[in-house]
Image 1 (cartoon, rainbow, N blue to C red):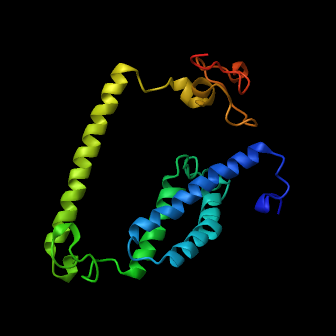
Image 2 (cartoon, rainbow, N blue to C red):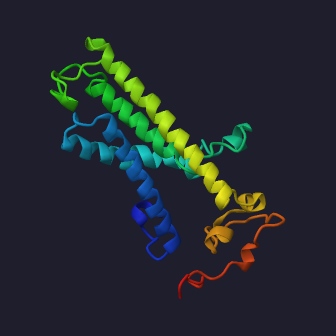
Image 3 (cartoon, helix red, strand yellow):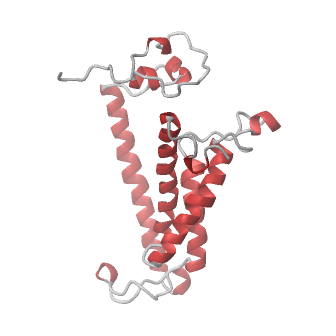
Length: 218
């Protein structure tokens, strides 16, 4: 049980940093469900739900995907690509939070039934959904989604195109394969990695010591 509750790891900064990294993602997974149950979930229920996610759900599923578990090993065991790859947390963080939120929303009641929202947005009466006599509410929410997709995606796509033209966004392909920690941050992110350096990439052996990078303006 080495490492359980950080036992025996207090003198290893790398493990402590990784613990902090995972703790922040765990917090995100536990926060996402609050949106699905907003204004209906008691604070005490939120506290217990957070403990459930942080102590059971996220550690187990996160280990399956990111800790060398069976999902990450599907490439070795069943020949399925590289196994489950989830660097940014699309499954281990965001989908975990979404599934927890969906489960909680189903238990609380998924649809607006007219029991809350009196006078919301200046409209008299409580909020009712499609299954409770107000098809207009579904249409309003659908317009909300459509405007979100059009406005946020449209402007953001334009923003990234302009930014790409002005300063460039894409890193070198060789650096992407070799890892962006050295060329972008100036220091290796994983001390024990065994990497095959790609032609044209900044060699990791030339990375400056941590804390020796020049600071602009000094």
